[in-house]
Image (cartoon, rainbow, N blue to C red; front, side, top):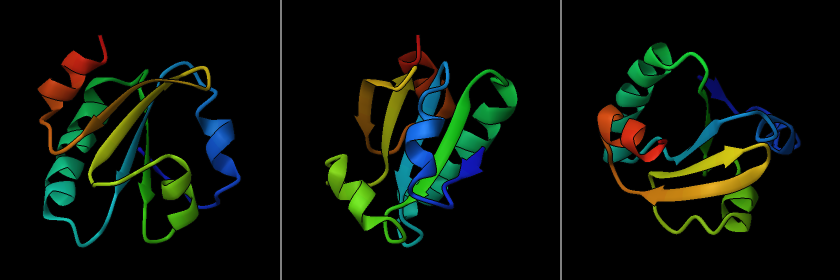
Length: 99
């Protein structure tokens, strides 16, 4: 699991095979709960790249990707968004959405 450090890295990271982007906020309770689920998922699915983006640190990126609520997950394959999910989900619910 990676945390976005520079906005310019975003486009490069999502070009990979399968990337799950977690738009979150540190003050968001459901985000904190889901972070634990994503940590377990990252250990169970080594081929899945998980990128966490704090919307308070990167507000322009959140606006650009129409993030209206957190947590919001976006799934990318080779740079193309293939799914967007909003709200708390367990690791099993997330895994089911990736199939």
